[in-house]
Amino acid sequence: MRQPSLTSIASYQALQAHAQDATQWQMRDLFAQDPQRFERLSAEAAGLFLDYSKNRLDGRTLALLASLARERGVERLRDAMFAGDKINLTENRAVLHTALRAPQDKQITVDGQDITADVHAVLARIRTFSDAVRNGQWLGHTGREITDIVNIGIGGSDLGPKMVCLALRQFAHPRLTMHFVSNVDGHDMDAALSRVNPETTLFIIASKTFTTAETMMNANTARAWFLRHAPEQALAKHFVAVSTNVEAIKKFGIDPDNMFPFWDWVGGRYSVWSAIGLPVALCVGYGYFADFLAGAHAMDEHFRTAPIEQNLPMILALVGFWNREFLGCPSVSIAPYHQDLNRFPAYLQQLDMESNGKRVTRAGDTITDYATGPVIWGDVGTNGQHAYFQLLHQGTDVTPMDFIAALRPAHEFQNHHAALLANCFAQSEAFMKGKTTDEVRADLAGQDAAEIERLVPHKTFPGNRPSNTILMEYLTPATLGALIALYEHKVFVQGAIWDVNSYDQWGVELGKVLAKKIEAELNGAAQPAQHDGSTNGLIARAKAAV
Ligand code: G6Q
Image (cartoon, rainbow, N blue to C red):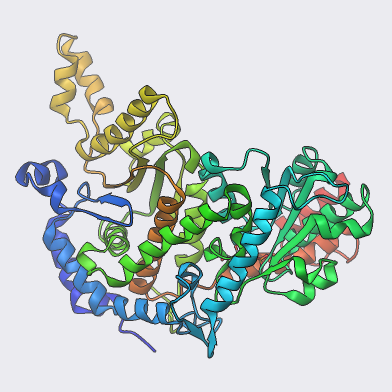
């Protein structure tokens, strides 16, 4: 169904008129004028607290943004997603990662099939298998306990489990070391294999399609390596698969009993809640994996039922939309002030950019009059402060920030935690307030007057730079689940406003096809084709180096 263009609807135009004023506001003044600003512009759900008061907006901005979400049919599309409608229009699929974390008594059907029962049947298998590996019942072919788990997958079959296993390090089994091999670069596989013993290693081949070139090459390499140290019949104790493609798994030589299935209504970047999360269950145990799912479900319920004005994913999305569309911010930087979340920015990068990095509407019309998904990037605080925060404070682009922190640490070094939180809060304060020329002059008082004037422009911070702060009490499986679901739904809401299909990813296809051709040319299996001058030149140099 063709929607009216975003920029033509009444609520967009009201926002545009409002933005004429709002973009002139200084946040310092907004805070001075409203002592209740923090209370008014913050919200809480599913163990997460969101402070969005350090943005260039007020209550009216938010009311207009909520009207826009309503006029755009965001709630309708949300309900359609939860109900299992095929909202992924270009692949004719339902989008039901929320069903993966729904309780057993919730009835959800796709094409007449009760998928909750299917989901819980696979969860039961994940529980049995992860318990057996963790408690030492599942042994390698020489009778030794498993000590290392190598997950072979890429994109959505890598980023989620890897990020979550790192984030939940505190809950990990002490005997199990997790490895993640994703890159087709042989150095990745080499690094993992050089650290493991074939007798005590379990390989998980994680691929929804079981056709992804990088994963298949890595899987074949791992299998060949393993068979150099063990007989063929040992494979069953050391190789399991997570996939939707049972035929391909059999062909690879994995026993279907060792296969953990999932379904085409689970998008790759939304799949950590499915059997793709098997490494998480192995690492932290099924109980904590279930808590992780429950945390996400709590956020789902909040997203599904809370009014837009108090709905965390809606607010985060609407504020982000405001910054993107009306303040012209081309990127968003994610700054977790938690070392264990160090892969979280990379995870969000895929979640957001692969979902909303689109330039046509759901009906296929080219978008020419508004911007869609921003660039997502970032790193943990405090490290980023000593690297790229300079540009964020004084560069010519304004980059909204998401600060993420746990109020309580899972270590005993309290002084470190106070220092960490102090830095987190100080940065958002500095981005908001900046430093005026008068404040710089006051700092330099006493120095030579000409020298002061020379330095003032360099030491001035414009401030008025937006940020959100997300706080949780501890980083636990449940709060991590809620945090990821918060961002999943934020991406959903923005995709609905921009009228893009957030659930396909055709943009990754072209390069794959070309790489196949060039690989054959590099291997000598095909004659060099006529590429452009640059590509021909690069291929020639690579061939000369072989
Ligand atoms: C995610 C994408 C993509 C996908 C990988 C791996 O949404 O679809 O990142 O997860 O290309 O695909 P397979 O799991 O099929 O190997």
